Length: 312
Image (cartoon, rainbow, N blue to C red; front, side, top):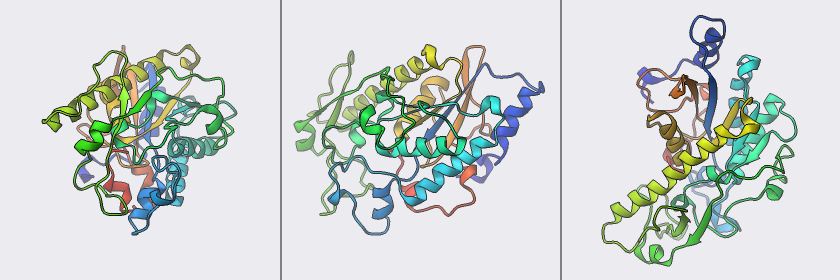
């Protein structure tokens, strides 16, 4: 991260607290968006070991021990906020790493039962799921085995449907060349597709693969935009301070859909969005910043996998 764009470690809490004291306009609403903590498969691969070859759900790794520390530090950071602005509800993706991240944060904040809601609309983009095996997403009952804080009665505002795309497998629609390969050295093949209720299904047999990726990205963006809107409009959440815990591409698209600003973030990073007069803007970053905040992680060593994987 550019040192000129690095946020002040206390900018988040003190900036908002200053507005609460009347020194500046108080935001109408605050939304926190975080990327899950470090995942175990990437951590092991950075050490030359393989996790996916021994897993029954290779696309759904847990967080690593380092990731648990990252998530706890995120919770500790939120703990410095005024009580009126600390996250009171967490909405997360239906995958193990996001639920575990949410649980670690909730534990530090001492949130009660039913304070973690599993939302399909925040799930990882389909083309980034590694070696996907059905069922692709965890249900509330599955999630309760990870966290006792899961709100069992919550139903996703934006359900997601997937299918395996044989054409993409044949066409070898893969991730960028710098991404890690399978344990046998072959490129990772990403043939899982997300079906959209209104946008046309993508023809992955096109010669122009860049066009295919653009169309797939459009489906993810539209889903993220709709999910964010529905979560914010949910009557059960109107008086809550919401923390969204999701994945690289989803956090990026969510922030852009609300603010028009493109921001990326490494694992464990987060951003504060503030709403004023009906418009959302980034509230905890220096002007011109292009990355989500990591100042709360400044006291721990950064593993190689923290910066090497920008999408999942």
